[in-house]
Length: 428
Image (tube, rainbow, N blue to C red; front, side, top):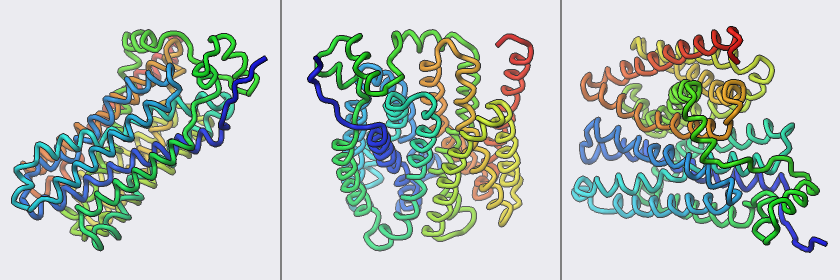
């Protein structure tokens, strides 16, 4: 007779994972206002501004792959807490640097980058929460659960950009805003400690039950999904398939682009559109939260139209939006372009993962790890390109930088055409 007690339900598991991702992902919103501030008070160059904006996305992207692999062994709770605590240390470090006299901040810039790397680890909670949530829910409910998880979590940067620029920075200043954020992170970590739970199978295993016995007991509780095989083997197999890397490139453009534009938006709003910082926060929130809502809708749309049609239509939408900005039409055209980018990127981010089991059925987990992790590196590289064009072209470079997005979406459409021919040719 089994006397081991398990705690939690799918609903509390989803709540805990969503809260953890929301808290971890929100930190990216701090870097846009920081760059605007440093450009004003210490004359930060466009290149260094782009590096500071993008550096959290580097660690937050690359760490997704190894920490996602840990979920199959642990269930998600330990890697979640490691990432959140590391992010807290980074935020406290940034607060320390930003609290120094202005003339000393420039000398401490390398330290600021280091703390940015640490602060960005919270972004990697995305892949951990995807796995943790998936194990809690039966397959017929996973689409809805993961849509809520990703959609609500992705709203965090926009929401906090609005809060920072409209409330905390005007009232308390930027350094104190970091300290307040550190306090919020502490509260989030505590809440995750109490709410974040591994699925039943992992709890039974922790209590010492053998694998088969733990699976049997977890099935009795209602769990359907269990770790299958070796995670590293899945990563190895998927890495050998060209379809994995083609979808990495598409996700680089869509989700990497989403991360990049969320971080770049305050600079675009203040430097190109001439908005005050608080209005830049409103625009950032509108873009980020809009794309997140569209991502939730994109899951349902891809179920209805199929992943291929959904991604193609969304890429065309994003391409049109980026063209409206890149052509330097300005004014309302820029705002319409941003709206189309939010719509296209948000829906595409959901549609891409609909294609994974269709094209890489033999190693879905590994492929999702590569796509989610390396695709998100776009959040690091794209701002560097935007900053480079800005440095070379001056203020007009804000608009001309969007030719990068035009190129990325055009390439992605070419990739989708290749995959469509492969699909219709009967190779899949």
